[in-house]
Length: 208
Image (cartoon, rainbow, N blue to C red):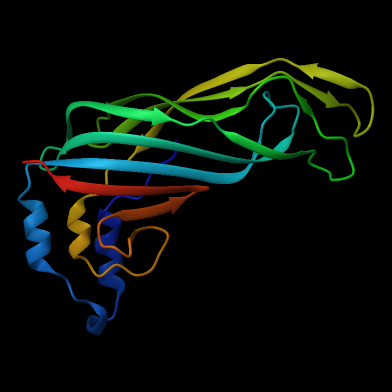
């Protein structure tokens, strides 16, 4: 399962920084910590090279881009959802289809590859979220032995749970280093984390 870096990691990062570089904004941290319910606009953007042919035997790479948007309300103190979250999927963009070996024939897809389709969101026992994620592989014709006769690989689907951490807005008051693990956006309104081709942007607002 993938796991988005939690804000607890920010505390460890701060502790490792030189004393002169640490300038915690305790007033800002307290303002966020007093919030009972925080609304989040979460945007995930993916860019990377992935295998777009289903099954474990055949490989066909492509450059894939995808995007998902999530809106939810979060009880900070109890680490629980408030109400029902909503989400919006975007159709995957696939380009530069190729074989593992550049000299070999690329596969021919017989449909659309969908990298990441969010199906549902629920709380997990550890105080985070569990996302139900679907990847759809179309049928494909793949060359045997690099340039030989093509064989048909059937279409398939991979539905799986993925762990997802909700980043606490208290991190806005922490002196975070410039790291893909967790950084504050230039406009100071969002928290950003990058991992495994994904860039997740959390924009919180106090609701209660």
